[in-house]
Image 1 (cartoon, rainbow, N blue to C red):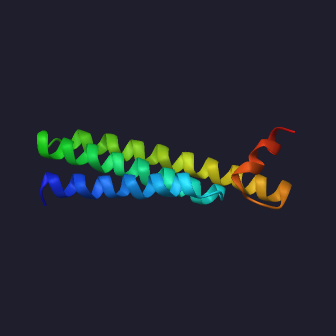
Image 2 (cartoon, rainbow, N blue to C red):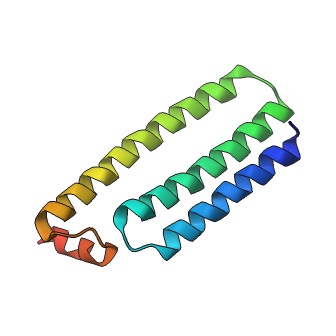
Length: 100
C-alpha cells in the first residue's frame, strides 16, 4: 500500500463524513459524519507518520486520540438520548430546547 492510496482513502472518508454531517438533521447521523471526518484525518496523519518516520510512538498517539473520540461519541449519544426522552425526537433543531 502506498502513501497515495492511504491519502485517497482518508480523503474519501473525510468527504463522506462532511456530506453526512452537513446533509442530515438527525443528531446521531451528524455525529456519525463527524466521526468519519475525524477518522479520515487520523488515517491521513497515521499514514503520513508511518511513511515519513516509521516509529511506534505515532501509533500509540493515534490510539489515545481514538480513545478520546470514543468518549466524545458516548457523550454525544448521551445528549441524543436526553433529547429523545425530553422532546420525543432527535432532530438537530430540537437541541435548543435542552437548556430549558
